[in-house]
Length: 175
Image (cartoon, rainbow, N blue to C red; front, side):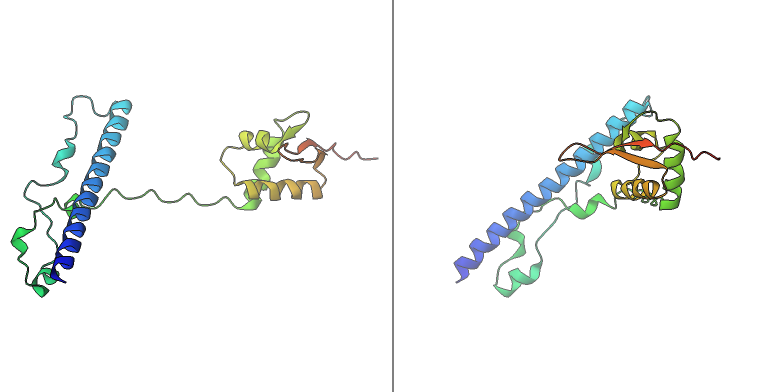
């Protein structure tokens, strides 16, 4: 029974070391990528580049909890130290999510975008004319509303992979 536990413990420690090494490598890749972005922006000129190996203090080590060893009479001294992933510290603050554009704002923006379109056009043409990226579902909802309001006419319905084509409706004439 003790041999099974020792074998299991050795495998877990080996997996832990491999996992921590992967985390460290991933952090180093992130630092190198950030350095590349700074260099491309010209913000790294004259500065010393980051040293990815300095992310972890040399003295930092990781040991498995002593509780499992002590319960089976094993000594923690036979466990080789592993660099601590916790020494990486917190990452950068994530960017706040962009708020969704309300449909009524999108409706007004699509009407403005239609002024710059001639002939027949598709949803992709309208999306390119917008000053922001609208969700596909919201844009379709607005296109349906514009058809209902008789400001837009569907010339060709969508078929398979071919998108629907639209044209602007003629303005109403006063008699």
